[in-house]
Length: 327
Image 1 (tube, rainbow, N blue to C red):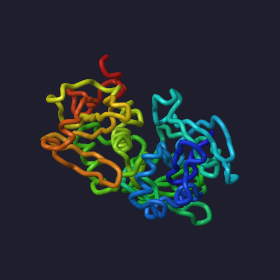
Image 2 (spheres, one colour; image 1 turned 90 degrees about the vertical axis):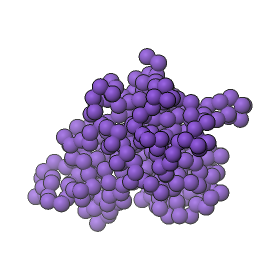
Image 3 (cartoon, rainbow, N blue to C red; image 1 turned 180 degrees about the vertical axis):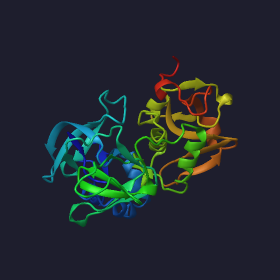
Image 4 (tube, rainbow, N blue to C red; image 1 turned 180 degrees about the horizontal axis):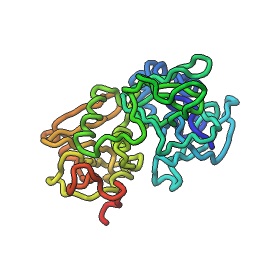
């Protein structure tokens, strides 16, 4: 089984897509914060305009390797799909290219019922072999370690986990343990989402080091066990359709603009918080914000509302959370 062996790996559109400035994002260990600090407004914008980065994948996420290739610089790459990120681009999962050095072969890396989930915006994984430590993103899923080797699974303020990089521990107050769960409510979504106020937008970002609009809602809903597709144009095809003026907290708002051919397409998504407020990761070189819908350009671009939380119960979801729209 192949899985991601760095804290956050980028899934690129081709082996030739990364630029010299992107080298820190291709390293093992990944130097994500250095990469983000090196990017200026123009090089960030180019990730979008030149369609270089496709999405991001977190430590120990399983991937299926489809092809191996060497780029013009002699670096090895794997073409993969990510089953946990659904996409109309490939029914098997989100497709893209990842440096071979950022993948590992590890038995049992897929998340299961015994997963420990990072629920803090950021958490440090410590105690790894050779004294290594990793700064992990919100929603990283790791296996709960089995008791043994004179080490307890849960040791006071520490939770021990088994990762593809070896055994380590996370602060207890940063994770959700097996059997625990946040209630699937609009209030939970708002509580989790508002912690990212001010975080800078990142095209294709799907980690708490930087989100794009669909990556933010994809992650928030995953935190309450609702599996949305990865991209906004796929997300709008799911959930329960709702009239625009009947929106309520916890719904997703979708917005459209003309594309290069003049056809109006969904290109943005936001979480509705109620009382005319929405939370979103707006656009390149902006930051995650809570803002009023009324009087904004988003009010005129609003084209669809989708509901995933069951109005019949405060902590229930519409079956599977991904009912095709219109059914």
